[in-house]
Length: 71
Length: 279
Image (cartoon, rainbow over all chains, first blue to last red; front, top):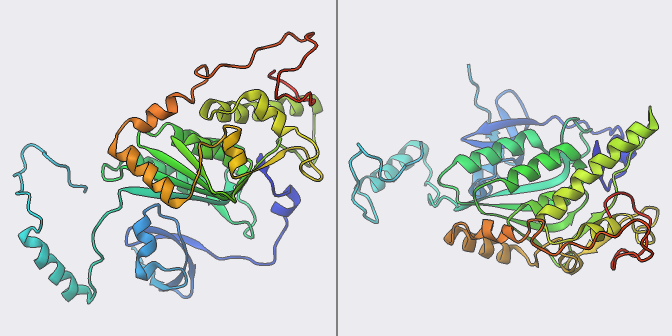
C-alpha cells in the first residue's frame, strides 16, 4: 500500500523509457550501473552510504567503470 | 577486516603519526595502479539519502525514482555493526511510498544504537515523515515542505467495511509512530491530516520549514552544517542522542485531556474538524 503525494495513476503509468540499470558492487562500493557492453558500464548513481565513495573520481555519475566478471 | 584496538594476543603497535610501513604501501600502490591513494580518512559517519519513492513490496515502474528497502535495510545493519562508523545522517527528499517499507526503515533508524540525525531537504512528504522523526534529532531546511495527509486507496475495493478498517489501522500505525517519536500531539497531527481548505482537491496540510518545527514534528530549522555539527556533538558525547530522544517518549509531555464523547467543547487545537478515531 502506498502513502505518497504522487497520485497512484501517475506512479503506475507505463512510461516509454525502459531503463536498463544494474546494481553492482565495484571496489566495495554499491552502485547502479547502465551496461554499455559486456565489460563496461556507466555509473548512474551510487547506492553506498559511505560519503567518501561520492568523492571518488572514478565513481562520478556518467563515468565508465569496468564490470568485474566473477566465475 | 576492521582494525580492533587492544586485541589481546596481538602485538601492540607503537602510536606514531606515520607508521614506517605506510609510505612504502603508498609507493607500492602508485607502482601497481599508477594512481595515488585518496587520503584514507574514513568518514566518521555515513549518509543515507532517501530520495524519490520509497519502494517496498512492489517494484514501481522505471520512471519512478526510488529508494529500495532491500538496499537500505542491509546498509543500516552494516552501519550498526561497523565499529568505524560512529553515526548516521539521513537526508530526505522523498514524495512518500510504500507504508511497510517506510515504517521498516523508520523502525531500523529509531532502534539504532548509534547517533542519527535527519535532514529534510526539498520534501519529506507522507511516509517521509516517520523516517524524519525516527532519528535522534531532526532538521528541516527553511524551504523544505512536509505534506501531512491521510492514506488513500484507489481501485476496486472488495469488502468495504473490512478495507476501511484496514486503512484505518494503517493510518493509526503511522500516526502512533510519529507521535511516539516527535513532540507533536496526536490531536494536532490528526487535525492537520484531515484539514480541509489547504490542499486544493484534498484534505491535509503542507508544512513549510519553520511550521514543521512550530507544531513539534521536527526539532529545528537548519541545513547541512547544523545537521553535521549536531551529529558530531552526539558522536563526541555518546548517549546524548538517545537521551534527547527520551523527551520524545509518550507520557513525558502532558497529554491532552481525553474528553468524554458527550462533552460539548472540543479540545484546543482540534478545530472541530471531523476526524475519526483517537480523541
